[in-house]
Length: 93
Image (cartoon, rainbow, N blue to C red; front, side, top):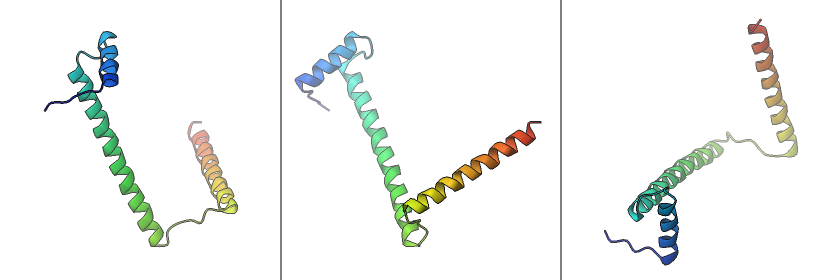
């Protein structure tokens, strides 16, 4: 495969090579493709999570977001945290 870098990309790769971060333009291409692949993997995982959330909402499992529901959620989280802290304190004695 023949890949043509833009002048800016060549300069960017050259600086990385000069600093010792990369050994060649090919290394720059390989790293760029690895980062792209990872980003696409994360994107696919996010889309699956989004699909799961939409399905959950369609089943009526969602929670309406209001100021009151957020206060209620915060109180629940605090209570769970307090219970966990208390459990940790009583088991460490």
